[in-house]
Image (tube, rainbow, N blue to C red; front, side):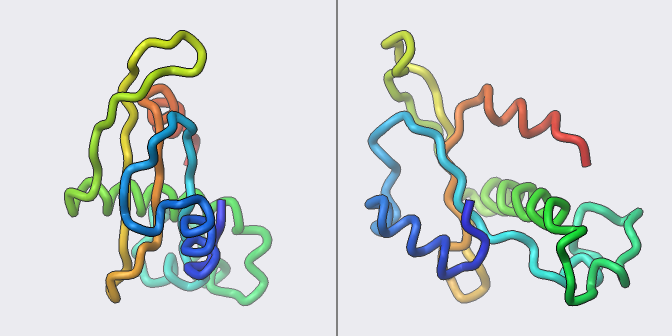
Length: 132
């Protein structure tokens, strides 16, 4: 995972996804920006029970995992809400059968890609079971 927008763009360009196309392999990947420090303070995050003033401090190390998880959920939600996702059938590397995968993309207010995710339904189920 890459957290800064430049890091996400560099990762995606380096892996041949800069054109916005759906990847041709069946290798799952996640590349997204984590929630910026202070964003949760403004009530945009998924953790309303956390001390928002503490999350806004400059040393975010204690909250890094929480900001990453919030970023993951936020990008998945935005992809679905804005219709930037697609189901693609790919041949499984393990059994050779065609299996469905979901491809998600999210952009920021300037239209820059802030997330791309290519996941199996099994992986999405696991993500849905993550504790918050």
